[in-house]
Amino acid sequence: MRQRRQHRTLARLLGSLVLVAAAGLTSIGASAPPSAAGAPRPLGQIVPAPASVTAGGSAYTIGSATVIRVAAGSPETQRIGDYLAAVLRPSTGYALPVTGGAGADGIRLLLGAGDKALGDEGYRLTSSNGAVTVTANQPAGLFHGVQTLRQLLPAAVEKKGKQPGPWKIAGGTITDWPRYAYRGAMLDVSRHFFGVDQVKRYIDQLALYKINTLHLHLSDDQGWRIAVDSWPRLAGYGGQTQVGGGKGGSYTKADYQAIIAYASAHYLRVVPEIDTPGHTNAALASYAELNCNGVAPPLYTGTNVGFSSLCVAKAVTYKFLDDVVREIAAMTPGPYLHIGGDEAHSTPHSDYVAFMDKVQPIVQKYGKTVMAWHEITGATPVQGAIAQYWGTLGNEAQVAAAAKAGTKLVMSPANHAYLDMKYDAKSPLGTSWAGYVDVDKSYAWDPATFVKGVPAGAVLGVEAPIWSETLTNSSQIEYMAFPRLPGIAEIGWSPVSTHDWASYKVRLAQQGPRFTALGINYYRSPVVPWV
Ligand code: TNX
Image 1: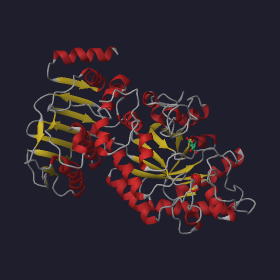
Image 2: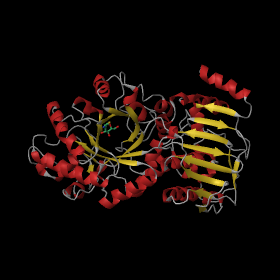
Image 3: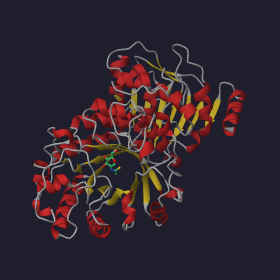
Image 4: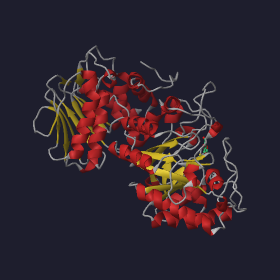
């Protein structure tokens, strides 16, 4: 608070040249007067909050003569330029040619920022009357800078038909990079199946908020969702239904690769999850030999958890997992492969430990880093393993001990980060086992300190999972994810010094018209002062 007040004084002293570093943002956010018609949005009024903002100088106005300049000879930069043009052309009505020709004017997307602090995902955006220039060390940084540029324009820029404008970007400089390297969202495609187009739609939305990881929960009791050539009945039989008895579905290998390609083009890595040894009824139903008693159970369409287990004692279990991991690892360019490990209530503890001792090396054998839910810390995580924390209390000594011993954590505390929790008692969708999670609550936590005794350096990042027991279509996913997802994205991206509900809720409120323009179905939470 004190720091914030100092920044406000500084801002006053400097008049129109407002220097805002980290915490200073909050003063601008909360106290900025509503901008006059046609005035640009104040620099920094975006989600996630940028690391540093220096506002001042004249605005840039996108006009009929504006060109998008990309680094010559960089097809990837060209692609990012085309992506930006595809956003801007319909609403502005301008031609906005993308060119490799150098020039000091227009919207410039340039590689080679030469600034180590920006890392692989950071960027610098400088705006003045002559040009808007985004520079970054890597294409991922340019892509994130392009998301910032979108948000600096009026919300109507996201509409599909021509809008009046003007299209101004306030003068100044944003220098921005992420707090955490892992900023994820998980989609449960098992309880209800979501097709490739639905996943792509979610990827589009995740990219807006600089999320860089899509975790796909590809198997559970209710459905196996990915083709495995060596075990064809997994998808062919185990994928044919879902919660409630509907038709289910599964991804062909081509489908999965299409999702990965689309995710990569939006600078998201895909983390495939095959949940083991529990949450495996779909697999057990598909192959009788995977069951200890040799009898395949029926397919399951309810919502109970903890009743199924792979047969830890049988050799075929590990042949099965070796095949599955090999085929999925071969299709997955990202470094992680998630083996679940949660809620294995039907697996005796000693079996669970023995199972994890056998399965983790399989993941490593195929060149992937083991990821698992935090129950893995009750077994023996291999060197380099990542535990995904989904607890609510933050007092799990076992998790802290593992983190001290080198296991990295991805933080998804269910009472803050689970997007399938009901907002309140009136929410028509979702569950409430971790309590109601309204938008303020979902934002009210710090990944670095949530679990007592975890060294700050052990936290790799954050993830917002969305479990789909109650969700059947994109509109319902969006209603649960928005507006909580942008808050989790901010917790993952922005410096902790910017973390402040009072200013965040003002910036979030401004996202409302943007959600609408993008056709995103969102919950009008009463805790947000929507504009
Ligand atoms: C717990 S949290 C689960 C899932 C459920 C979810 C519902 C975790 C790792 N497992 O099986 O879908 O609760 O919120």
